[in-house]
Each structure stands twice: as C-alpha cells, then as structure tokens.
Image 1 (cartoon, helix red, strand yellow):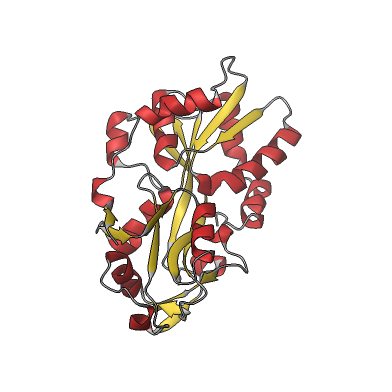
Image 2 (spheres, rainbow, N blue to C red):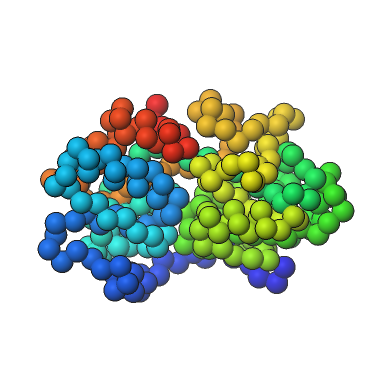
Length: 276
C-alpha cells in the first residue's frame, strides 16, 4: 500500500466542469434540464426520468456523471440545473455559492464488501478502519483466512468516499492498493479479487458480492434497508439534488414530484431507502 488519500484535504476541482460540458454538451436552447453529478444517483434518476417524462412529455431530463463534487460545482457555475450528490454540500462550496439549496430525495446505505477468500462475515467499524489505515494487512487478523488484504477505495471527489471517510475514517488517511471511480468499478474490483475489500452503495449489492455485517454492541447488523430505517445499521448517507437558489418552473415541479408517493416508490424499487 504505497498510496493514500485524506478526507481532510479534499479540494473541489472546478476546472473539470468545462471539460464535462464540452464532452456532454449543455443544452443551448434551455429546453432540457441537465442533472449532473454522483453516479450513485444514476439508477434512481434514470427511473425518475422514465416515469416523469411519461406523464410530462414536454419535460426532457438529461443525466450525466462526474461525481458529487462536480455536480455541485456545475450548479454553482450555472452549467447544470440540478447537481446530484450522495454527500452534503461542504462549507467551502457554500462559501463559493451561498444560494445552493439541498433537496433530499432518499437515503442510501453503504456496505463493506469483501472478496471470496476473505473468510469473514462480520467486522466492527474499528476493524474496518484499521484495514483502511493499513494497520491490519492480513485477513487472519480479523478472524479470516491467511491472505494479504487488497484495499480498494473510491476517488476523492466521490460522495461514496465522503460518506465512508466521515463515518469510518474520521478524516484519517486511507492506505490503498487500487482506486476506482464508480460503484460499478468497485463491485468489479472486489468480485475480481478474492482477497479484496471495498465499499458500495446498497443498490449495487447482489448475489455476486459478499457484504459483511457490521458488529454493533457485540451483535452483527446486516446491511439492509430495514436496518437503516430502524437506525441499527450505522453506514448510510442522504441522496440529494442541489439547485442554485430555490428551484423554479419545471425544475421546481420535478423536484417536488421526487418526494411524491409515486416517486418514493421508485426510490424503494431501485434499492434505495425512501423518505419516511
């Protein structure tokens, strides 16, 4: 593990916004609503798009990636209508643009996932933290098999990294072997290496990945929506749409719709945690 990344030193890189606009094309005629940002929100936003445009054919929603930080910056700079973020807007981002408004549309749990040869089914948050600090390097140190741990993490601009850093690492440097830039990339990195560890949003969990329980007060708590909702599982974050100022017109109507029973049913169906 020769590389590290620190949650304390994250810097939002606004220059990337211009590159993204050049690549994906910001609608010049204003007829489209551009939502840009966190890949974590893509599955639910894509389903929102299908359902909402079916009922409102005059509304066109364009969705693209870039990460939570870039989504927030794009809204701040006026190059996107909606920023998709799986973390809270940071103080430094609010200092740059005081009018940013956050609209929570649901929640997402975060699961610690391990490779097929790890030999563990549950860990404490302190054990997970020690692995990502580089203090624990072999699975046998946490009751698993005798194998060196291969650590995967997300990139600094990721909302998934931000949540993991805030809840697990507390801003301490992560020591890692591999950095990936999406939940899908993380899933592939962990399932493709039997000795790996990483972390994923709940909606990326399936039979291909081994998601470990988190031991709380001596008991293993499974990474499920129900356990987030009953506040027994500790790893979760808000899913947020960000606008520059209070939304107006078509954007306002769309964001209000995302909190409707029909939209919240979509949140649930796509593997996220609906608003209660």
